[in-house]
Length: 168
Length: 399
Image 1 (cartoon, each protein chain N blue to C red):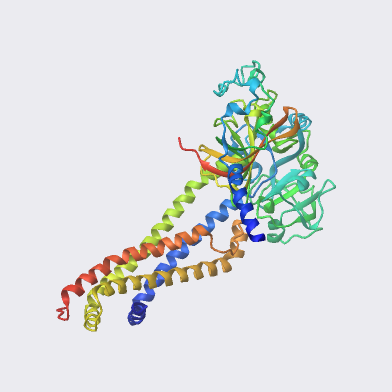
Image 2 (cartoon, chains in turn red, blue):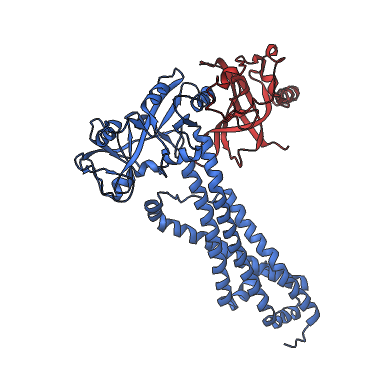
């Protein structure tokens, strides 16, 4: 009898479990902005500046900054494409912590993306990065963690489960 | 199984050539595994050199160059960083800690690094591993020095010894700061990083021996830890845009990856060479089997006369190749492990690279399976010819 009830319970719960572990939500970078900020969003990277000697006001000051995050994404399973800026490497040279950014070169030459256009990714086991110029799909659980920096009160952290190369 | 039982004695009958073939394969396999091992270890020792640092800041040059001179102690800085800029950045509210680094002096071929005591607390290597002392303590007084494990071992220094620092970075120098001898107060545990080959002294000591009146006080580079990792890119930007001085801030992870992309070319070339050596080994096996074909026509005829079918003759040759390749691969594994075991201390002392005796990785096993597979595929050629012979020859052979 207990065997039968267990079987019944499994049979009943199975469809629900399948629903819960459904496909991760595919994200566009604009969706990382809170809905109110999305209208003026310009996905093109800011122009590079190289004339450090001109003495004019520096570019970062001109860059419109949006600090708030889209709280709706907290705890969601998502899939998002982007470029990898390695932060921490393990003994085998695999990247274990990185920033995922919407355009390549976000580390130098051009002003960095605003804080809500950067995702801090932690990946168990690491990612062996063949080339920094390749883009990747990152799948995992997104969280909007509160962090106290001068740049904003919160930002995105993604616990990655899978990373695959992006096919252009 | 009966085919294997035939193949083994048949090989034994030609043990001279068979042994040579096995040795050729073994050596090529050992070379391939050795290159593979060196390549992963080199990458690991690169990757685990620095950890837990958000930014490295130096004079404006290139990311790889800055990483090389500040962390790997290779090459030289193009320019120094003024203490003023250093203080300004260190005082920024987003900055949690900084560690100054000054290079330019040496002790008997080992670089002397001027820093402060926070270096021993903040420096991380591998996966956030901290530096620890094998003997003694961090420097406290002006003329205290802390040695890396390699420096202490190869020059046979102990805590309490007195050393003289020379200007310049050669093996010897004719400008020695003799009137400023240092006392060894601590020796660090081995890390497998350039820290092992460094003599650490305080910044003030570097100033003292260089007479700070003549040169404006400056440092070579500094490490930055931020309160939040998320501020990294903005901070990097702010430093790169800093108008007071031409500075460059790099993310260590990015620079390490760029460095590896550079070194990766040589690494891939090595791997290709090793692959060709393996191919040569296998071709050697192929030619050995092919040349034996004619001599063995009679053997085949006898086998046919006692009832062997042509496909069994085919299998006989394939299994012979399998035996040669497998023995070769196994011997190659034994060879490389023996080599690593005996060469370990030498490589560690000469190249500063510690090669651990570890199990074969899945990738290694894949390579080995590929070698055996290639051997089997190659053996199809003599096997097919033997098969044709056995069909045509029957029992009447004219050699």
